[in-house]
Image (cartoon, rainbow, N blue to C red):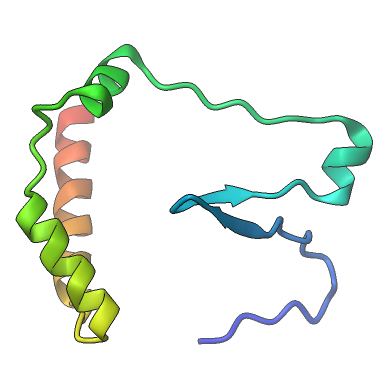
Length: 97
């Protein structure tokens, strides 16, 4: 599906530039001129999890997926992703009631 801005009303998105394996969002001319900046902060729990050496990450699986992406054999299972999103949504709806 292609999304086209035929009306010309959509804002210009900043460009992403890779820096040391991380995506860095560049500033648009609008932000530079107005001096606006964005700020992101992590909760203490998230900060401790991301800094933890004992984080539950299956590094073998990460390496396997990374290799599959690199050699072009990685396939996205859209049905599995959709099922997971629906399941997560249902869990959140039950918890919020």
